[in-house]
Image (cartoon, rainbow over all chains, first blue to last red):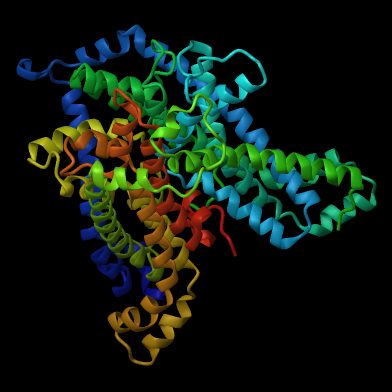
Length: 300
Length: 280
């Protein structure tokens, strides 16, 4: 930092260095425009949520309707169930595979191959993931029932019986995102200094103790990051479920995003949907504010 | 270096192979199905191996059903939105990484961008739907370009910021000392050095744009403006499902991001974790 900049901080704009003024001159027009463009939807959502067509301003009426709808709580419950099935499997599975590969596989080429392979499911568009699993779970043509048929077992209605549909849609999430957890955890394990690991082994630490006391502390911030990203993604779940079940049977797989979609675009109640959008945006903003303090990334 | 017993190694390898098969099989079956003929779809038990390299379903999807038009829409929207997002992100990242911006300003811009990543698209698309219709842009490509640009900007900002931070300030300063103007230092020193980073960001942002479904689904209505994923969805949820066509459409939707990601594999994790995980 130049002397001018330090003086500038103390005495205000007029004494800021030319360089610092250049920062604002370059940043403001572009960032300002983008900021406004990205903020307009918030404002629009609030306006729509507090008005009702010809009636004009209706205050919090739309919020009362939106939050008074029992179907909302059903959707929230199903979303929580979906997350409760998918996230633990993804996180424990991804962590487990990362530890296995890290400890057992020594060949650099094999490690690199696994790394690239794990990227494949993640980059597949969710709509296409829906297509893939339609071919797995469809009762009459899906490969799962074909295989079950060969073993003589009963065929199951994977997508149209309530508990199975929930599990089937969550399993798709597990298929797509366990590799992501693996990749993050594997990258984290590479940052553990080998001296500490070797020292522990010399001291006769068991595999579990090595994980618990040496590796886990390095992984903790990354685990938090993964939970953070995955939680936010559960609220976004839409594409593959829309393709697989459309929210059915009944409302079993009508997760939060599908519920808001149905209110807004199938029942065309945009006022109620906007109220929901405002609630969701506000909740996610609070969630972000709280949890971002604990993230490992450098914030400045 | 760790020593594991042979039995443990064999068990681990078998477990990993099992997991790999579990993950790969659905994709394998998708490809096999896409290679089937119409007649094969009526087999009482669907076969697990391809009966030959029959590409009729691909032709049927792209030309018979006219999905080639949707593919073109996807590419136009993806390329335009990517180029605009990267240019805007660069203009935002330059002052906060190369000039003495205060920590607070820098922190504000980055944190604001990251917070957008956590807004569910469904909540954002409801107000956009009204805005786009008011502007008369409903069912038109520019609407998608606008929304995609804004929605992927955070990713572009975080990726470019990571790449720019790695280029030492001294290189540019040396040029300034030698009498170059700031513009010249930018144009002839920084820009060439950040070429790889820009390319990686372009590839990854394009792949995200390509995969986007919900915005396109809600903001378009006809093949004139629909993107490829919207077409795939229509194929799946229509009354009678044609399995091989559906699978072929799925393969096409997958091949493009997969190829791009293999090209930019070193940067995929940077993109997915907003720079928290960096491959060296």
